[in-house]
Length: 160
Image 1 (cartoon, rainbow, N blue to C red):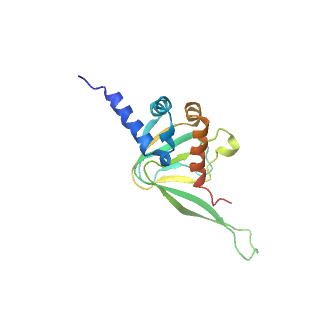
Image 2: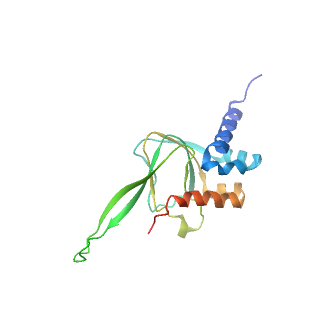
Image 3: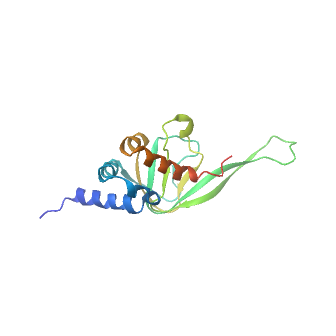
């Protein structure tokens, strides 16, 4: 009996999504929705040092880290204490490391909430699963989208 390679790949991707992705939030997803999500995800590679999400960018893409490590970087503006000069310095601070199963990217279609306040960069070679945010919103039940949104937003709790 010939095994369909695409079917095996799909089953492996669904198992990863259910067991590893998004802190287990996707365990509650119906088999049908999980299969739709798995089919809509595109696999892509990012080398170490590659910027995956640009700070201030709004690509409309949702990501799941499949393998590798990525660093979460925030640009911080440093203002002088003496207030005599208006010069500011910007430094980049690594605030977190993403591991396989972690999610990031845009989970809102509202432009005002879409811009990333963080930069995500490959720390090692990364394999990413991604899909347009709109596809995710159409595929998953609303409470799950909210749960995913909370996870993504929790990375940025120290903002402003």
